[in-house]
Length: 416
Length: 95
Ligand SMILES: Cc1cc2nc3c(=O)[nH]c(=O)nc-3n(C[C@H](O)[C@H](O)[C@H](O)COP(=O)(O)OP(=O)(O)OC[C@H]3O[C@@H](n4cnc5c(N)ncnc54)[C@H](O)[C@@H]3O)c2cc1C
Image (cartoon, rainbow over all chains, first blue to last red):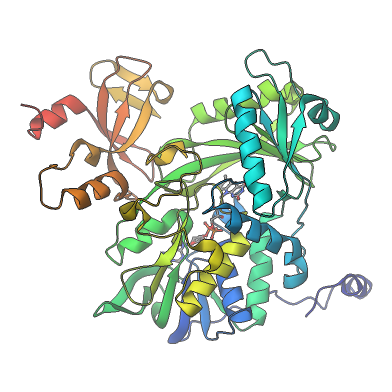
C-alpha cells in the first residue's frame, strides 16, 4: 500500500478500516543469503539497500526485542554533516544528501526537518577551529556559514551571550542540518524493506555463530539455528557482546548516554543549538518538548540509565546558555548504550572470518549516519569492497596507525 | 553511584574520574618479541563485558588515589574497591 494525502483522506472518510500492518511478522526461514543482526536504524537500512540498490534477495533482519527499541528510538534526533576529517566528512555529507530524499524514497513521513544547527563559539581559538571545520565542510560539498554574535542573536534573542565565563562570540551554522523523527526512520526502513521481501524477525536474539574452517555458516538464535551465506552485525551498544561469540575483542567500550525532554512548550526554539564550551545540544520537538542531552556518563555501562551528576551537569549547561529554561519542567529522562570506539569513529569492515561483517563504534553520532551506514554496509556485504565514502572505517586501523580521531582525544573512549 | 573508598569511606561519583578496564595496570613487556602487537592490544582492545568489570577510578576531588573498582556494568552495583597500589603490588608490578 502506498501512503499519500489522498489515502489519508479516503481512510478518514471510510472509518480508517483500510490500513494494514506496515510490515509482516514472518517466521524465520532455515536459510538466507544475508542475515543482518540488529533491527535498529542501521540494520534495517542495510537490509533495505541490499534489496533495493544491490538487488540481493533472501535477506533477514534479526532483532532480539522489537525494532526501534534500541538507540534509534532513544536519540536526540539531530542530523548534520559538520565534520572535518577526510575520513568522515564525505561519508556524513553523503548521509545528509540521502536524508534529503529519504521520505520520497521510502514513501514514509520521517518528519525530516532541515531547521539548521548552530554550534556556538566562546573563544578566539574556537572561532579559528570552527572556520577550519567550516572550510573543510565546504570543500566536501557541504554547507557552512560563520555567524557573528549579532547574527546569532537575531535568530535566538534569548541566548545569554554575555555569560561571564563563556560569552557567545558567534557560531558555525549548517543550515541543511536538522532533526528527523527517530522511530519513524526505523519504521519507514522496516516497511520499505519488507515490501522488497526482507524478513524482519523480532524477538529473535542471536546467541552464537556457527563457523567452520574460518567461514560463517549461520547464526544460533533464541528461535533456532538460521543458516546464512553472509552475516552482518549491526548491534550498536551490544557490539562487544555479539562479536565475542565469534571470539573477537573490539576496540570499543559500551557507555551510557542520557537524554532529556521538558514539558511541552509553545514554539521557542526554531533550530538546533549546541553549547561550545561543554557538551550540550537542544532542539524542540513538534510536540513542543525541548529535547536535549550532554555527555556520556563516562564509565562502562550496559544499564540503560545513568547517574545524577551528569543530570546536574547537563542542567547547568542548559541554564547557563538559556536562562529562560529555568522555569520549564523536566518531563522524562532515559539512557541508551553507546558503542564508543577508541578514536571516536565507526567501524564498517569485514572480519577475519569469511562471510562475517561488522558495523559499529557509532559513539553518539550514529543516528545521522543511518542512511549512509545502511547503504555503504550493503555495498560491503554485496560486493566485498568498501564504498568510496567509507574506506577509512577499517577495523585494523588501530594496528596500522590510521586512526580517524575527529576530536583529537586519543584512545580514551569516554573523551570522544 | 557511591564508591566506598578503602581509606575515606563512601564518596560520591562526582569526586572521581574514570579511566577504564583495570587491565591497563598490566603494561606489556617492551622487550617481548611481540611487544608491538601487545601494545596495540593494550592500548585499544577491551573485553567490555556486560556484568562484572574491574576498572580504574581516580579520586581527583579527594586524596588522588587510584582505585580498582569491581562493578557490575548491568546494574552499576559495586562489589569491591581496592587501592590500585595494593593490587599492583600483589601482582608483583612494583618491587
Ligand atoms: C540518548 C542518545 C542520544 C543520541 N543522540 C544522537 C543525535 O542527536 N544524533 C545522532 O546522530 N546520533 C545520536 N545518538 C546515537 C544513535 O542513536 C546511535 O549511534 C544509532 O542509533 C546506532 O545505530 P542503530 O540505530 O542501528 O542502533 P540500535 O537502535 O541500538 O540497534 C541495535 C539493535 O540491535 C539489537 N540487538 C542487540 N543484540 C542483539 C542480538 N544478540 N541479537 C539480535 N539483536 C540484537 C538491539 O536490540 C537493537 O535494537 C544518540 C544515542 C543516544 C542513546
